[in-house]
Amino acid sequence: MMTKEPAMPFTIVDLEQGTEVWREWRYGGVGASDAPAIMRENPWKSLAQLRAEREFGKRPASQTVRSSRAMARGVALEPEARAAYNRLTGHSVFPLCLQSNAHEWMRCSLDGICLDTGTAVEIKCGTGSYNSTAKNQRVPRHYYGQLQHTLAVTGFAAMDFFCYLPGRRPITINCARDEKYIERLISAEARFWESLGRG
Image (tube, rainbow, N blue to C red; front, side, top):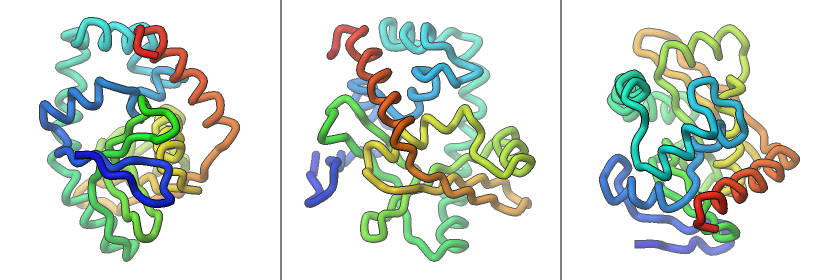
């Protein structure tokens, strides 16, 4: 089911993340996690690899094994991390799927959003993400496109990047909307979508 939010630039898509129906919806457009590869900022996945995923429906086996372990850990820790974020910030965010009204192919599956306060959060539970963010005190460059894609879909001015590992102090970095980057991002994503014969 899809619900347009009054005065919001997106439509809510009522899907449970991780289900087969959700995967089909995700592959029916360009998601936030696709943005780094499209912007050539993903050190683990090239634009050509992303295109192959979309055209042939699966990742190379070596990449699948490696990434599935990290993803499984992240999925398992995400509810705990979201609860920690809510406690620390006083927000009340929940996972939600959104689709852009301006560009129907732009989608995002948010780890956390509160529509009443205009708050969104991207949660990372990996050791590498945590250590990089702790050291540099900024969003790692390979996640920047993911956050800007989400900001483009939501229309929000900023969102949080939250790194969580059990037993370690959580890290919250606020990421502001970058209009110039978003303009380039939408253009690059549109070209990618059209190259798949879906534009």
